Amino acid sequence: MPVSRRQWTLALLLGSLAGATRAETLEQRFRGYLDRLRSQGRQLIESPLRGLAEVRQPVITQRTDKLPLGTGNFAIIVGPGCITCRQAIDHLRAKKIDFAVLDMATSDTARQTHAHLGATGVPVILLPTQMMVGFTPAKFNEAMALDNQKQMSDSAGSA
Image 1 (cartoon, one colour):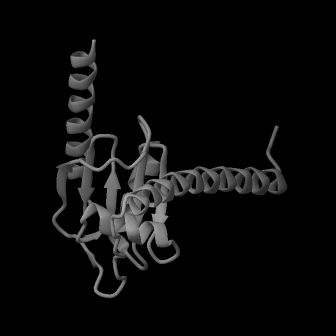
Image 2: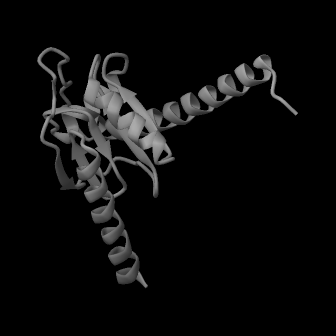
Image 3: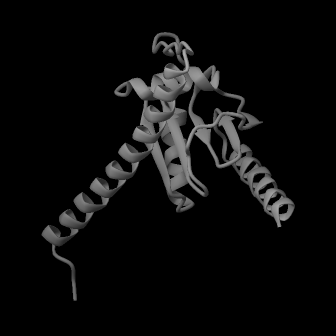
C-alpha cells in the first residue's frame, strides 16, 4: 500500500520531534552537570562564537569529563555554518548512530560544555569513552574502535 504525502510528512515530523526531545534531554543533563559544578564554586566560562574554527585535522582523546552522556549515547557539538559539522552529522546518520546535537549558535549549554571540555574548534563528537575534535570518516572509525576497546576492557575489568 503506497504511503500518502500527508502520512510521510507526519512521520517525518514525529521523527524530528523525537530527535528534538532526545537532544533536549541530553542538554538538560549537561545543564544539570554544569549547574552542579557552579554550586561547588567552580567558575565556568563560555566559548565565544567569534573565531570558532572548523578543525581540519581531527584529534581523538580519552574523555576525562564527567558529563552524563549515558552508555552507548553520542553527542555532537556544532558551530554555526560549519561544513565539517554537517558532514559529521550526515556520517552519523548514515551509520544509524543515535546521537544528540548541541548547537553553539542557539544553546548556552552547548557553549559552556564546549569551554568545559577545553575544545578548540568544532565539531566536537562525544563518544561514550572518547572525544573527537574535528571530523573525517577515517578518524571517526578509529575513535569508534578505540571506544569499543575501552568499553570491552572496562567491562572485562569489572567482571
